[in-house]
Length: 492
Image (cartoon, rainbow, N blue to C red; front, side, top):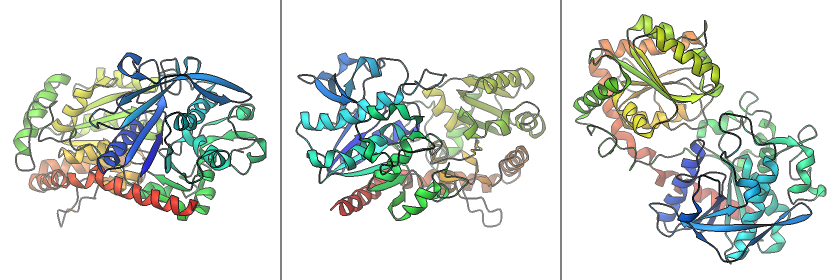
């Protein structure tokens, strides 16, 4: 099958979140299964043109009543020889540091025009390389326009047999902009309502993707159910309920070659499901030393690796005079480590808490080596998300025998199994209501189990490590192929 991934980001070229991991990993899995997969994305400043091949001749891309000229560069996805990645190179649109906006700041105001260049350019690229895909797979609101163009313009231009699939990575980000940008999108006003753009006299890119693609997917089964509700739909629940038969929730996988404690090159000591006690103890000591904590094996170490934004439940953990972090560290006698960055108030409060709590340490920012060490050296991992479309760190934690403490939502509910004290079943500790008390009580439950039921705790750790194959991308890739076939059937 011929599949074109249209995306704003993909690792290792540009990344702001899990979308970039998913696009690359799914593409590689499909490629390894024998399919002709290609990726098209913008060429940002961070992507070195010297490491890619420039295609001969310019690429003309329609933008409103004008045609702009771009260059196209091509490279190969690392680890997947024969999987091309194309970069649309247009200085005015993409010659800047951020993907969606200034790092740590607001979105770029011209995003509709920028991503119109990407989506219109994707079709022009296909003609340039004489390659027409059977599936155009668009990811989140920046590329939703590709499914609209396919349905309302491109069918008569060589894409009559091409079906559109649209993946929702996060309903909280919809791409809502002033209606004045609409003439730049390449779709006539006669299609404005039918394409699904209208949103209280504004344009809503995500809504248009939901309305126009043959099939819709999101990144976990439970999140697929949640976004069809008033509480989880962010205003789009009606459309999603109406298109329920076309919506599939497919759990993201993880790269179990990279995230594998048996051969993780970032770890001081590797381990298996049989040797994890010794291995985790060694990594814990290194983590404690690295973060400036007392090196002790008689204290549970809890960690978070997170974006410090509201979605991740940070107020309930860190907010002054409200969050439970101080109480957790002061009353439960644990060590606590945080790696992440985000909202300024939260970063400031974390620094404040570090000054008050000798058993709490944080690194603001992101560090790949430290993230692997945290997963391997921690006893438990806290993810109190308000909502979580899929989540990756809870799966990393399971693979590394670090028991997750999570809210029962989205992909967290699909991957973590609640601990049962009587049967010893389960792989983590879960709560339902996001309040500081719920977070504290569930952490306390995990700490109590670690201290008083070490055999049960170790049994859960071993079970979690052994189950890593269920998170491989080959499983998810097979499910996406089923979605692609359904999309083609609907198009026929």
